[in-house]
Image 1 (cartoon, rainbow, N blue to C red):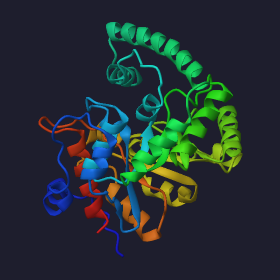
Image 2: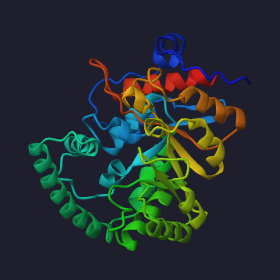
Image 3: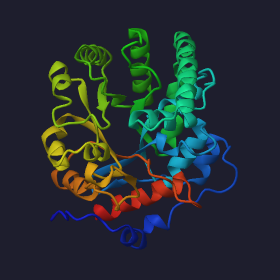
Length: 348
């Protein structure tokens, strides 16, 4: 098949793809029981011409209800059948103590700090929230020692019965340098119970720690996919990959472009056999201000990357990560539907 290297036009893919208009629209209250899902929903299928399109559940962070059941409804409404699961829905389902910090408020503050755009008052607020979060992490660590791990099998069954597989798991505050081996192994064991092939974590930029994680991953029979933001380079993962066969990539194609890497398709070709999954978003190059835009409007070659995966039969999933500003009158589910429609058109 010939690869079309041009970006897809946003208006074109919305008008042409049935997924932009078909599918289930959110209606009624978000709270409902899991059996209700199974009775009223057709199982989704986002495996398109051999390419598995998934979504990271972080994409639904703006939705009011973050429970296991509501998150499953968002996934089904989006038409997705495979996910990278952020820890919150599964961990709260298993009885994790409530988080006293408003993470939806903390994430933007962290972003402002990274970009050097944080005010003095915001800096103080972030420091207070960070201190609260550190105390909460200790509380969660204590809970993990006694939590009922069968809850993760129940969670997996609920999602699998609805037609949704879990290929990756990203628990909160679990795989950092200051976490104990017990914390790290807990996250890996939970991931295996959920059916994930890999857990994901931000690349720590520390060779000793990637060596440690790789060894624990081998012990527990699950891969570690190292995620990247703007620190990504073609060689970022090389040392970790040499250290352990269980160290792998969770490439973020959009951030890779925003970091100024000029040949983003080349890393997919070079590292595809060590790639467990790949995040998809449409960011701009540094010359174009690094914006995070609706798909088809930025500089990230999402369509060519998907076509590369299709043509070469690469098996890692492409994970929709919704990070652009949701337009007024829309919501996260509707925007993920549009991203999936973009993928469908690219892969026809």
